Structure formats: structure tokens, C-alpha cells
Length: 92
Image (cartoon, rainbow, N blue to C red):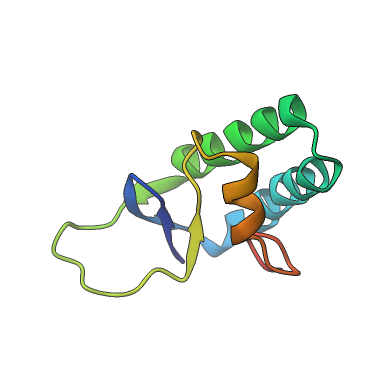
């Protein structure tokens, strides 16, 4: 699956990693819903860092779309709130 980390570019993550990323996404959703800035920052950093660890960069000449878009770890709570769908950032 190809994801875009806003401000960084596209990366490819194996489908087998989506369950773990979805768990981190759930924690992020709860922090956003509570409006807890400290918890939000921790959860967002954890999610983005784990995506970086589990992924590999997509070739610079790749012209395909991103299947998912996640914010960079410097995003604000309001920016992330605007990106969330009913299923969070990572559906599943």
C-alpha cells in the first residue's frame, strides 16, 4: 500500500503492517476526540515514526496516487482532526 506522509513524500507499507498501524491510529483518534494535546502529540509521533520504520520510499519517478495520506509528526490537533474520516487515518 502506498501512503503519503504530508511534507515528506510517498512510502510503501506492506499490507501485513496495516493491523499494527491501525492500532496506533485508534489511539490517535481517541486523543483527538479528547482534545488532549500531550496525548495527541505522543500518538501522532508514534504513528508517523512506525510508518517510517515499516516502509520503504517510493521511487521518485513513481506517478501513482497515494492510497492513504497521513500528516507529518508536526501537524496540529486541528489539522489532524480535519483529515480524520469515520475510520481514522488508516481504514480497517
